[in-house]
Length: 92
Image 1 (cartoon, one colour):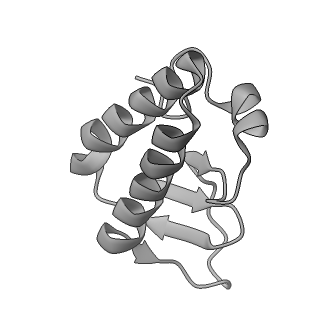
Image 2 (image 1 turned 90 degrees about the vertical axis):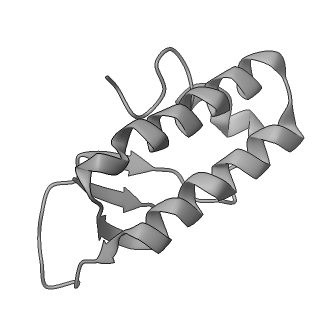
């Protein structure tokens, strides 16, 4: 699975990690829905960290379509309201 973190590049992440990343994504949607900005910030950072630590960075010369695009860690809570809706960015 190829995941792009906006501003940080692309990572090849094992598909076996999908369920765990999806669970974090679902929590982020819940935080945004409930207006919990602190929990949103914590889980967005956790999502990005999990991808970076478990994925392999793809070189800039490798042009591959991303399966998922993750917003940057500095995305504001207001901006997140437009992104983390419904089933989130990791769709089942």
